[in-house]
Picture 1 (cartoon, rainbow, N blue to C red):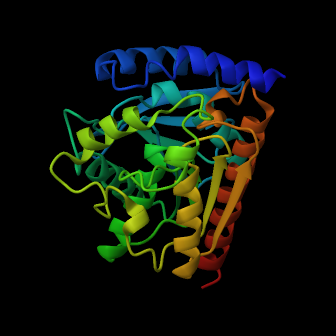
Picture 2 (cartoon, one colour):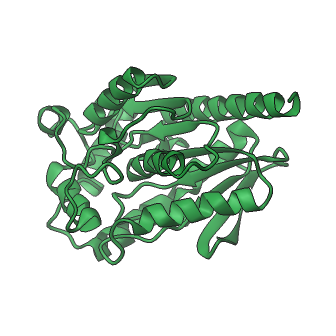
Length: 303
């Protein structure tokens, strides 16, 4: 019953605003307001930092593990949102993993189309390496999930050290919107509309094709990528993105797992303080990353 109420609230307060009829400027103000209303877990601390010139937040709960790091890339269709508006998510990642979470405020479209966001994500990752950190995982939701995957692909192609693991929340990996749920779930999704997503996609890709592999990494070569865990809701138009990504990653030999949460909407983890499934998802994702980081650190120390 509570989930139905929350779903109805999103349908009234958020879905109309995220359509193409509203300006990006208004969408940014409204989503920021809603984001900061969602509180992180008790004990969440955030301080500002610069990651190779990219402004960012350093988020912890308690004393974080030494030598481990999570790079978190926030969602918002590459056009909206910020590190400040994501503490409800990043704080719970920090708590469930016991690891410091670094959240860059990468540049947003339409002012800064691709490759600005990817360049900033890479700069932030390389900054962590420059600090002496050798055990790094990357996580992200929605557009940040797509950016997480694109970052891993770019690092692999550049021959650079790879992240230990990837945690993806409802990743937006197909900006061309070819999946069937972009049509079948239009009414079921209480938050995202195809026209709004199409507007953000075009603002981000500008003159590039929508299926460019570093904008829509579903179409990239996925061989050699690290283990990944995907969480997605059954009611969202982006469900096809996650299901297709799982299939393509598995075919490429990637260790990939997916959990589909029945009855849940896009990015329900943002409401983790109100929705038990959101808290459950973030606990599992944080635990997955910590397990992968610990195994990687143990393997390195034994060699």
